[in-house]
Length: 37
Image 1 (cartoon, one colour):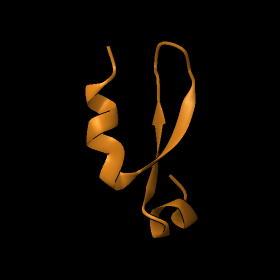
Image 2 (cartoon, one colour):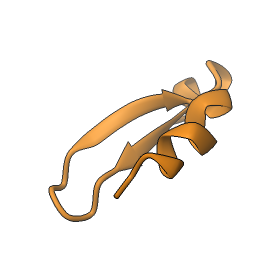
Image 3 (cartoon, one colour):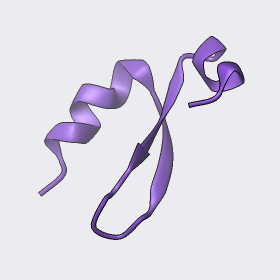
């Protein structure tokens, strides 16, 4: 997570199976984590 991303309220979410990364707003993080199979 970069300082710029944190200031914008975002974190990087990585799928450890595929290596795919996605920038997600912190407010949406819980919802995104619940949708991971």
